[in-house]
Length: 402
Image (cartoon, rainbow, N blue to C red; front, side, top):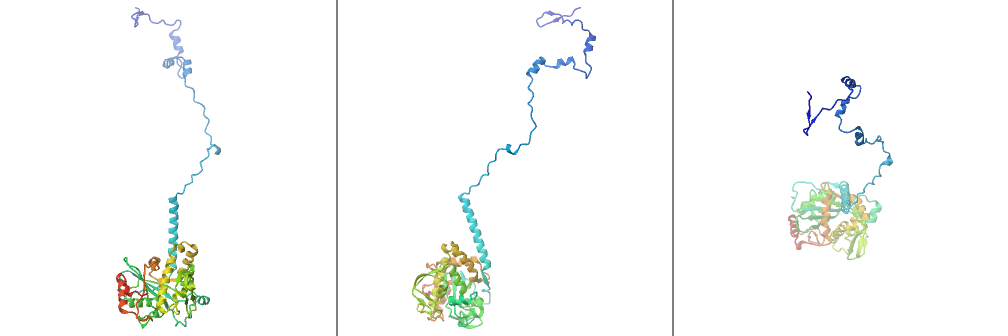
């Protein structure tokens, strides 16, 4: 019986004829042994198409790449030069400010450790208690320490033996700096004032310095005035003259010719710059027609000169001028002596307060006295003056003596 196949069109078709002349044995011989060649049946797994089509549409092989080589220095692109930072105005000002602060700090440390110290203020039984404000004891001594014989002759300091020997004070002042808005006060104590010196009875006030140095003088002033002394500053003859010369002299206006018959120093009337020698003669002069009240005129001139000196030191013309500032800086430590408990910032506060002397911002006066000899104080007026300073109240006009 012959099998037939029905196609999709419903017709009858005969199975495909076998190729003639090929037997099963021949097909078996065509089967390759494993591992010896390609099987004809592998064609069944290939996609449709011919080998030529495969070769035609096959992707091209990847391009050959040479192994990477180490680049030479010339192969790198030129680098950009480093970008410089621009200094703006703010950064420049900040740098200048930092330099200025460091400069001031250096000066501060230099002065703090260079200024001479002395134990001038000490507690004792019956010492006046601290009241309102701050009180400085300012002393101008006749110390000739550091002066050569030629310096003494040039400055007309006089003979120590002729002055009675020992170390004395030509200037004794109390500077009161209030805690409120009242004016500071610069008070002169005449050197010939008769007061009680602890352990030595009654004597001239400047004798206390000769008998017991700064400590006894401070105790004597506290006992005579009832004021608690908080700070101490002292300057000698040589130091005073050096400071004046360091800033190129001090501008002063002299009312009349001054000719001291003892020291031989002469100062002409008019506005002028006083050097160290003339300045020292001006603040010491009392044997002259221009100083008929002797010590009372001298202490008035001392306050006037201190006002001019402090104002000139604190002026921009001195602080910003290196030819004045650095000589002043180098001369200050040798010229000034302070209490062991005082510091530079205390001295700065004093200088700022005394700047107002020339402009009337500071009350300047002498302890009220009973006569031109200035030996005895007016007890009533003196008490009013000292009470005003203790309480930081305005000094009554009736007790101000210039």
